[in-house]
Length: 424
Image (cartoon, rainbow, N blue to C red; front, side):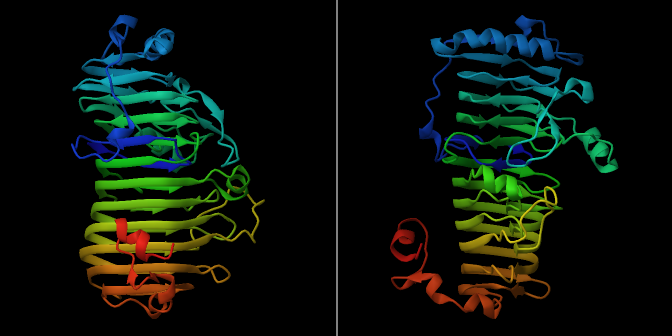
């Protein structure tokens, strides 16, 4: 399931993004019975020639399907073809199904994209509404037989890089304050900004991303929770996230990143079974003075890296500010991070850990990590933790605090052992 950038900011009660594997761990969260009602976008006058603008057809179809919300919901079927459209909103108890050979094409005309207020945790200006939108929705499935969403984003990136955009770029899918969402068996291409953006969704927990292939020019999966004082005040953390069985490639970014906008907090994240190739960074933790918030209780295991410039980065000096009103004394906390069972070949730098002097990164625990590096192995400052069975040998700062990584005689082994051994 080729996908592009997934940006996750204060998550949904249950959000599942997955491909076609039969061993998906989150499948029991969803009972995917067929919807009792189904219509084709053709019934609303849509034309799949790649030129006809189908925004009104999609809007009318969704409006019609709202009437089935209390009757078991309904499905909107998109047959093979190229379906050009501007922004439209989804409704609850809906399945949007893209048949094999079906492509929903985002219009490259700015006039086909409405503007909306910025997110309260980001706090400034307006932004373009995303292509596919949902607000306060329940029970939404976006799936297909490997159908495609094509954001046709090249022109947006040109406008962005030239500084000619008046507002922030749109995403392909944005779901706000919603619950019980499944996105599966689809291809996302050429996003104007981010491909899948769930935000402020109910209790901000229980998220699964699995069985996907992601290849983008920036971070492939990025966990965030708000920007400076706006994120601190809005106070919506990202928590209870499970990411597994992914193939990732990011030549100019990180395969998995936390922050740098993390002012609402990020915690209780499990990442496992990753293959990371031809990327700038494997795993990145980013923050800076003024963010506040925290990144804590993170476990990352079972990672295979190949041709990666820097395997692990934890940087306390990364990221711009929303405006000049941020509190310079709002110091972020990065603590209780376990990384174990990493192997890598063709690695430039094993790790670079640069915490903040007044708020060092603590309890950074490394176990069973073996990387073939071509340059200086580790760079460390304002960080403490412990390492066990790590090559090349880590810096002294990561051998300085064994008590933070041991409890009951062993370093955290994951799964059941985690509860018995690890101190958090």
